[in-house]
Image 1 (cartoon, rainbow, N blue to C red):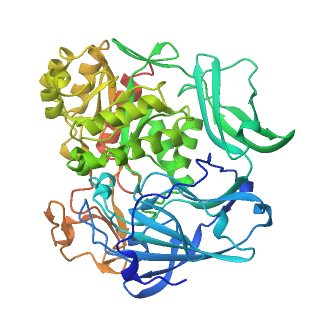
Image 2 (spheres, rainbow, N blue to C red; image 1 turned 180 degrees about the vertical axis):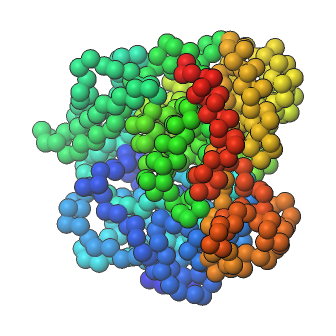
Image 3 (cartoon, one colour; image 1 turned 45 degrees about the vertical axis):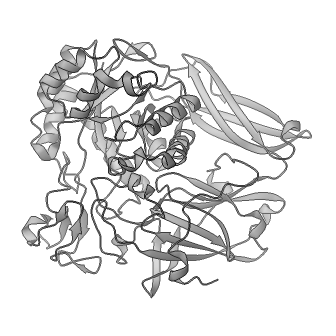
Length: 565
């Protein structure tokens, strides 16, 4: 069914909840129908095709823009798929792992759901709208949301749009199904809580098994040992569903003098990373993730902060197997700090927090939950902290603050909100040495810098800040460098996906410079890594992953001087 652009501009970005409740995501390749690939596409009256996952801008459909000034456009995606006979008598679920910035989905012309949380997974029940034959899914993607909540998903990077993560269909039994799985460990002991949904859920029987669990080994970055958690659901003596999760054993604890994992104090040698690639945009492949992470591993990085939103599910699978700690960030970024103050945003803030934690909590790599980035401390912030603690009380919480804000806030915090009750680790960004020393006297919990040593600002704070942290191990647990890789997009040097890169384009801090030599890194063959002037040249490696001097300084401190602790 065709949809005119004029009718979808005002669609609601609120997700439509499945009537029968939550469904635990099925991701086995044999049980999933992938809708990735080429889709029919329409924007601004023009028709063609587009790759999913992918971005509009890297495929020639929209001028790339930077920051939080993004033109309000709508693109219509269409794709046909065949009915699977195995779906008969079962609930069929359509899943979107990520869409920038909001969308509404239809199947066979009927609305099945939508969302305005770009980096959170959404699932919709499409059982009742399917036909036994050829079906069509249509997705109207908008570069903004109806309200201002899309600003939570913007940051100091390219504001590129589109269906940028996997789109898949799977099915579960209709009489009872696995609704949620939560796996927790304490040392070498384990517990699995399984929620069951469906009209006959009370009659269903759940069994859990840990495969390969003879002599249990603990999960650490040096020994990332994984086991298979098998959850089986039976009804009337018949196995109707089975889920297998890769899990690990580790115990996380914050004490006054530090952060302990498996009873051993750890030191975070971290790196901030923005999920973007010069050619793939935000649709990073497994190979691209692995190549970046292997290079980080080679210079002693033991922790990755997902700045400033949860990454693709495949990232966590790689981090689990390679042995990285992950600081997993709830998408409440700083460009949305003003709307965080609004009372009407409470439900949106809680929904983003819950979606992030429920999706990722069974990954052993996740070390901390980071509640937003450089936002104001508001009652909504506290609601997010409460939500996080209620869903996962096993991991510490951190709220990254601008350094000056942290120093002003800490002495006054209890006068405004019950902030200290929920935050386990205090964090400031780009603190001076004087501020770091002062902070030590203001708190009775561990401190870290979730951002320090900004590569675009000379990187001069790296060694002194790290030295002070190491000299005061009863206060500091380490920090994360800003940042890993220049956030550039590759052009042919004349046009960017069909648009003239030499023209001025507005963005959040005014206008970019029109001079070609100010726009990024030129290659010998005339192509350009466009970094929006100097704005996105803040990595310790260039866009092609070749190292900058800061790369070797990090390696020296993280590997040669800072042996694993």
